[in-house]
Length: 217
Ligand SMILES: O=C(O)c1ccccc1N[C@@H]1O[C@H](COP(=O)(O)O)[C@@H](O)[C@H]1O
Image (cartoon, rainbow, N blue to C red; front, side, top):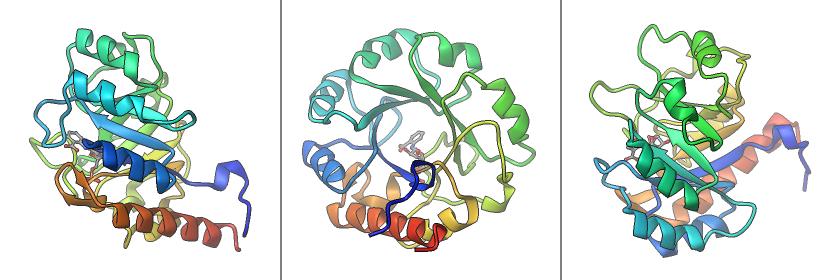
């Protein structure tokens, strides 16, 4: 087995977990990060009580990420008690992302004309930028890909690639983008909010195979 240098191991985030058994299966599949949706408009939304229950199951060294869309900061501050990282997936300005004083990432939807280097500068306080497909009127979780060639070869922030990833296309995405991490929700589900353990394991294997190809193993 090849051991990759840390910067070559593509991190994996599974997002939109709603059930304890899915949290356990995601951890068993080797996820680096688990995403919990705290936007009430989502079919994968959790209330604060459920977030606390699911968060307790997550072992050390697996990052608990809370996904927000233009949230009330009081909610973010309360939820942050159960989270390691905040994901802002709406139109939040940098000041909102920083307000709670916890590590955060900014999701950018790849609408026409988006200037990624300028966004990286504007959101320079972010731990990473998550790039997702753009569909008007929908903040995310569309299950759609975007044109990966629009991502510059180098950006001032680590890139988390999202949008329509599946066990079948994630290797191609990694070969094209070489992101810091990949993020998937719909592509590992049996139904919205119901994860499929077999698909999570297949996704993880596809990422590891793609990493082996990248390092010439
Ligand atoms: O999952 C949702 O319901 C959601 C709602 C609002 C904003 C983002 C949402 N999901 C995130 O969108 C990307 C891509 O998802 P997919 O793999 O295309 O289904 C990912 O970060 C999801 O967590």
